[in-house]
Length: 247
Ligand SMILES: C[S@@+](CC[C@H](N)C(=O)[O-])C[C@H]1O[C@@H](n2cnc3c(N)ncnc32)[C@H](O)[C@@H]1O
Image 1: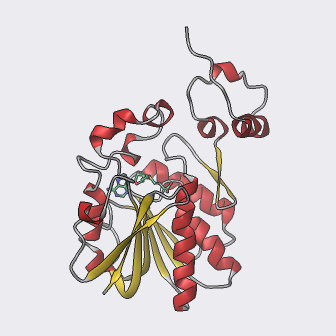
Image 2: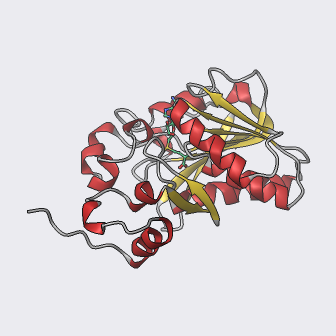
Image 3: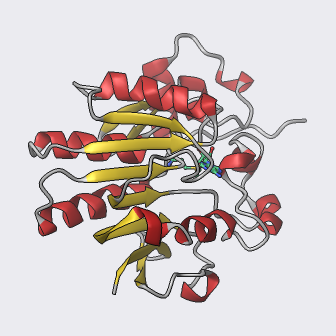
């Protein structure tokens, strides 16, 4: 017999808010966000589908750090890339923050998955007043990008080591897209591939912020010699962000 699922008050609240007369016993282990089609991120209501990862609260720090960096350096019109955008949560939340501060920007949102990009596009239309400086690119990392330099590169790429996927909670490994999770043998496959392109794509005063697995350390990555890097902790005090800039 199937074990009865215990829903948290938050999950019950979300089900009540977004669905009508749903039989909660029919949901099984499906994450509530895939039932409701909604997730709150940085105080904004994002659409989410089974083609996209469900954004996690820890990732909000990437948006906040990116925004602080732009403000502190006083960059007047930052050019930003959100690589592996999924729902678009990082780039779109940052765009909302910049708009509120009346800082003009250009943001490129990219993903290898055309289905994820459709969700990001919908979110952009719902959450941003203007689509003028938002560009969507179906691209394997930076392959299809124009040859320009970015002030800020944000990337929450797949970073879970392949052999650890089976240890993940069933609600993650059985429902979220494997292409959003599996980072190759050591979990650093995509991050290293992107790091190798930073000298070509990152402005001299620019910063790149990567979300990483909490088992990673600086030694896990092949960081170009011209860059300095640090690892920062997330809101649960786990090492989760690799931050790179020029020496
Ligand atoms: C961990 S999810 C992150 C989604 C979103 N940025 C977030 O923070 O919730 C990783 C995303 O990277 C995309 N991806 C995987 N491999 C990629 C590649 N080679 N180039 C670009 N995007 C890739 C996946 O489709 C997925 O949307």
